[in-house]
Image 1 (spheres, helix red, strand yellow):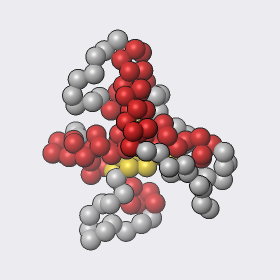
Image 2 (cartoon, rainbow, N blue to C red):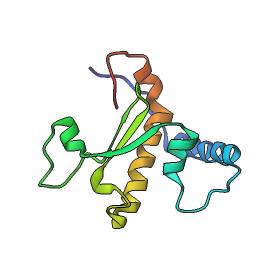
Image 3 (tube, rainbow, N blue to C red):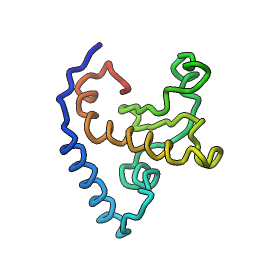
Amino acid sequence: MTIKVRYVSEDEIEQDAELLLAEYKETTGASIKLPVPVAEITTYHLALRLGFADLHQTFGVPMLRGQPDILGAIWIDTETILIDRSLDPKEHPSMSGRYRFSLGHEIGHWRLHRSYVAKDANQKSL
């Protein structure tokens, strides 16, 4: 099934990211320092479940040349984000930058696209 999603410009994405950071700051009273606390924003501010899994096994898709290429996924109906276990920053500290990027990417899907999925009860994930 295909869902037609409105084009979102880079400026709109940037504005929404700035709004999210402002909301987080207002909610927690904490100033935003680098690196952006994406895990805290996900679990405490957005109240989404966050976990790690072998996403290739989850989706039944083989890895690309032996390397994971599905690094994050979101399920709108259960308000859950899973990040591939190869990016777990506790297990693989050298992957913390890629972990934060992938989690931020999934947050973007939540903020910008969840309304499209909510309109179609048959589509459970992005």
